[in-house]
Image (tube, rainbow, N blue to C red):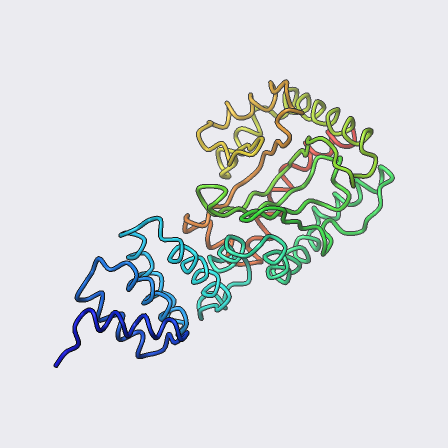
Length: 328
């Protein structure tokens, strides 16, 4: 005689209390949800069973069913986060072929604590930095800085990358805190709507923190350099920059907002030129953006060589603006 729904529920709960999420628990909870599709607890337990057996897609499906019944189910929410984390750390055959940043790497950035994510992605980051450092434009930037009396023989060092918040990681060229930064930035959802990478020039205009060297002088310097950057664009690069942005997926970014995708390039360049409260924005950036949900961009992101080439092309385009701004 088949067990009653009440008996199935009792056995499933007993196994959960024992920490048993094996085949018997999976079978019991699967039968419960088949007979009682609105049983959120059974869907949650079923998701946990699939998780422990590394059946990640099935776990996601079960946990989403639980959350569809009760969006406030904290256990299902936490388990779904854990599923994504474990799935990210267990690459598929396809993701193992990636040498750049695939959905797996962006999931790591989204689900792990900031410093743990940075450490997990360090091999990919350092390999990308090595490829960028080998380009001729990287050598030109380093030489330009050396002519200004700055140190450094590489554009990016192994410790050039930082992550202070979940879902966000960034890198800027060696010694670039108080300079126009050749900047790379990775983002997931949250904090932005789409997983993406920015490549371009950024100005960190935020007030200096306690550990910043030359705090007062450095902050005054970057504000002056931003004004020079505005003048450089206005006098010589207004049309060319807008044309490049239109052809290359270029957007500006400011404050803590995402890429300003609603601004046409001409309007975006005008915004840069006419910004009169730069310090209040704290961060201003212009460059190319690659979005993981766009197939062509995803191909570039996934392949380190293609990604390094995209970085090289972007830095080469922006180099004259940077050089005039930085070197006067």
